[in-house]
Length: 260
Ligand code: URA
Image (cartoon, rainbow, N blue to C red; front, side, top):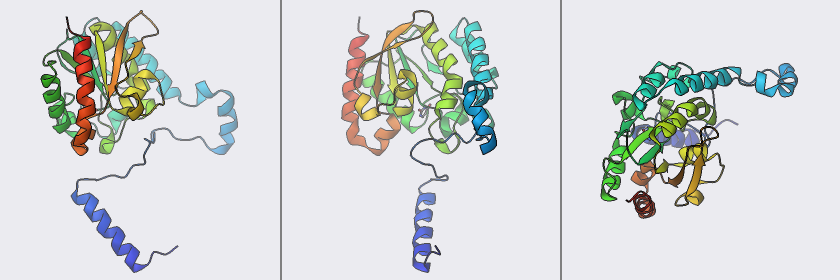
């Protein structure tokens, strides 16, 4: 269908509006893993029969390599070095400047897990140092948790255009997140945003339903477990300040859980 001149003018004006607002890329509601190239139809039948071997061999190898590297780290500092040296995450080659692993107290009672680094984090090499991070810090301090958190993300390289990380990217980085959990042994875990909560709790439930509900995060190996609390992402709060009320309730529940 050929657009009418009126449609074209309206579209141009809308695109200009988004560009001025800083939006420089278009994404769908759900993240699309564009690093995974679908096999041609003739190959599909074979791929179906041997899905686990053929579908994503690189991701499988990368996750195994991540598991080896993470298991070898005996401290959070060594884990940070292992993350920086890890080359298996596809996000590394998609424009990220550097690995962004953690910030905070390596003996903290609370592990905070966000989604993935944004532009400011990518530039500075630390998670949650942009506007959303500043809001997070203020709210944690108000809840009495200043200096009592260790902060990381589900992936350690900035997804292009600040999109959410895909489940495949999160799966490759998961061994490092799990090792951070095992080394820190926190009393409680705070999960920021849908992409974090869904990945860590292995659920498809929406964040509006999950938030405020304590769940158990238990690693399949090593017997490490802790209560985990999903809440709304601070970047969402910057757009929807009224939702701060819900996050505040969640933070008070978190603070009470680590008292004493
Ligand atoms: N959003 C996240 O989820 N993590 C960061 O580190 C920054 C913004």
